[in-house]
Amino acid sequence: GENVEQHPSTLSVQEGDSAVIKCTYSDSASNYFPWYKQELGKRPQLIIDIRSNVGEKKDQRIAVTLNKTAKHFSLHITETQPEDSAVYFCAASPQYNFNKFYFGSGTKLNVKP
Amino acid sequence: DVKVTQSSRYLVKRTGEKVFLECVQDMDHENMFWYRQDPGLGLRLIYFSYDVKMKEKGDIPEGYSVSREKKERFSLILESASTNQTSMYLCASRSGNTIYFGEGSWLTVV
Image (cartoon, rainbow over the protein chains, first blue to last red):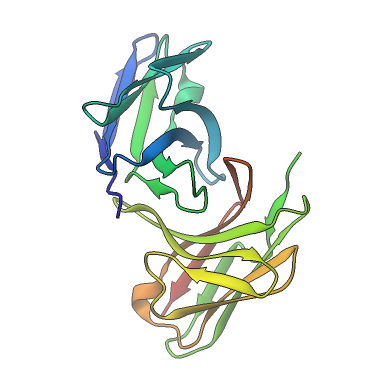
């Protein structure tokens, strides 16, 4: 089955700095890669996703890059703000079966004011 | 706005008790899921259901069962709770490639 590894497990940055979270996956059949944000005490929510036919996708201060050859993808947050503090999960899924999402172990991001 | 509601946010149960965790979604989604969230382990799939009365095991089904008698409701059952089932349980439903999570149920087994 798929194995998704996520690093780092914790990340502390100063407000205004950039943050990068990296994930690797093992199954070449995976071709959909979402990122979820979970604020303290709240539900995980989708913030951005990327499909394997695209190398990069941006949405305001967040971006995701995908290197399908190397089987890794990354979340980039620029100009971090305290409200970005949360746990972020990456995931991988084969497009033929969206009932099979494999999540990374999570990254706790702390943005210091 | 999709709503996935877990009826119990915090529960404390004794070892050996039968535990029911209930989940309801209001968007007529066919696919529903139960995940377990533990620090350092991320989200692990326990069971999912793709239709009423239909279910499939996920990655960690041992010690759990599920019930889906109505499309909007998906229940997770711990037949005989054990301390290693102390965890946060997340219910979810899916539309297309987006998963919508509930707010989670914190279960402590003592």
